[in-house]
Image (cartoon, rainbow, N blue to C red; front, top):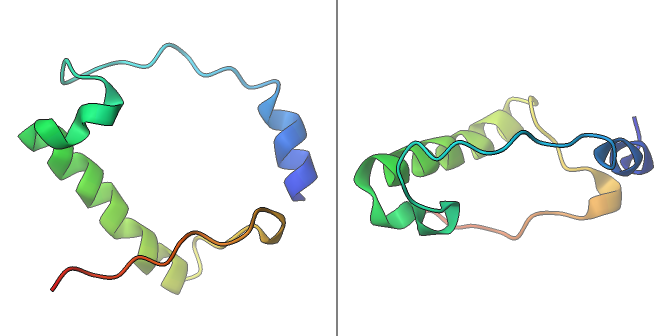
Length: 71
């Protein structure tokens, strides 16, 4: 599947109304302890998934910005 295929498909996929489990809009995730923990937990999975080959960049879309680990 190419990047063009993904873009074409994305026009037909309509997400359901998002559920707010925490009573906050997504952009305020950092203000809620459990919400923040879930976001950071999912974020922490990205690099290991890339390293194990489960995720990869889509060449046509360019790379994600480099993120360094906190000390």
